[in-house]
Image (cartoon, rainbow, N blue to C red; front, side, top):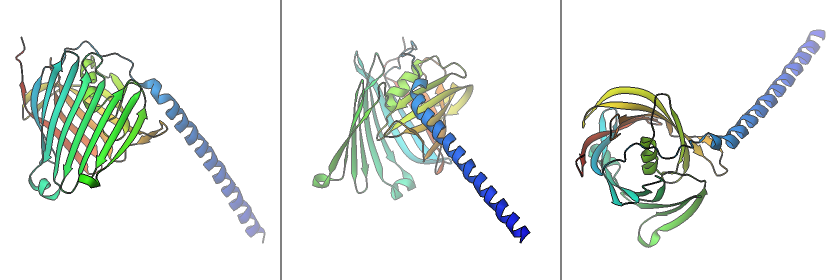
Length: 284
């Protein structure tokens, strides 16, 4: 009887300690999460656009895939249609065996302010085998309005959403902003990017320099590390469920071209690689 009583007492003590430990852990988690949600905005990069030369108007082609397999191709045209605007027009399509399984054609247009490098408007049209999705982003100084239409003909429905946060970027303007910076070794840049349907905190770290060969040629390159966190409705940071991290190489020259991207995602490693590039005007 004495032994049983001591065992029950010991069990009660262990359970009490476990509950106390769980309470402490829950408190610490809530405190850390709350601190992160409240303070991450203060870590955003405050630097204005750098004085690195603007990207010259060009046409470039890329291939996309995984494990050496080409799954899609893309073409972009970067231009300056007026003195105060940059514009990116892009098309992409799945190819080969992947297209037989998953047909997708994409048209993308993005316009940015040439002085501030902030986005003005983005429109993307995705044509699948059985549906069409049109996403339009309209940016202001205080945030973005997203209109998204999904369906075909009379069955199409449009949903509108607003996200309020100053100094947002889309993918096009984020690339322009980052390439304008000094990109010194171990530099860290944090920006908020709204590419299509959600906002993400992007942390870009300059890893160093190395030589890289892509189909378009061999380049001295700047190597970057990219990490993403999803931003929730109440500006809380959440893990990105499908994206882990990415490595990006840009040419270490007067152009700072996007050469290659390798991303660790939920299906493995996917890549994008520069195939060719042609400038509209030769450098003087």
